[in-house]
Image (cartoon, rainbow, N blue to C red; front, side, top):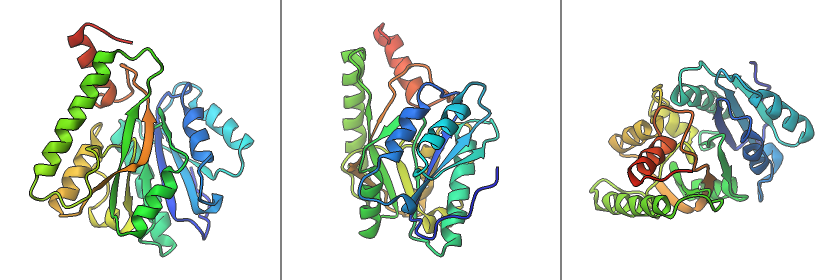
Length: 258
């Protein structure tokens, strides 16, 4: 799919890989369309359709027709997993920002089963204006009343332990208000993305691979509570590994589930 020329005011590109997310894609896009303290021309959404076999594309295009102020563009993914699809979008985002002469512009990422906070973009741009080069947002589990307490406690305790481990690292130079740096909420400046050579095209856990590259390059990751999203707590996800896989394993051990 050919992308239109970017708006001259573009400051942040949001990449959303999607594979068979017909039930959740509209919620994701609606949250992105309702962003506060940022004008429509300052951001765009690159939806990477990764060989969908359902109505994800149809529902996204209908949403775009009903919400023309959202600059929503479509890309084709290779159908080889979230890492490959996310890279397609992030590469395109980097080219668009650098082509505008905006190396400090942000390439942001979220997932199709995730709902970002109304100030998600504004909070990231504020952090970048203070010098952040890589940002990890706080990712909360969607609790609709059916999520077992044992899983909630496990997720919270895992987060506490991981944050303590990060704080103890001698090379941890970023702000560490939480532990997460995940595809559901992460961003880099276009210049930083170019510097690290882009996202490693792996089938899954591409966010962990990117975190490792950033650490080896000595690039701080600011993990900020002000950058917030809520993601699905489903036990069957689209990736071979990731949050849904981890939750399913914990549910099996605890003898519970959604």
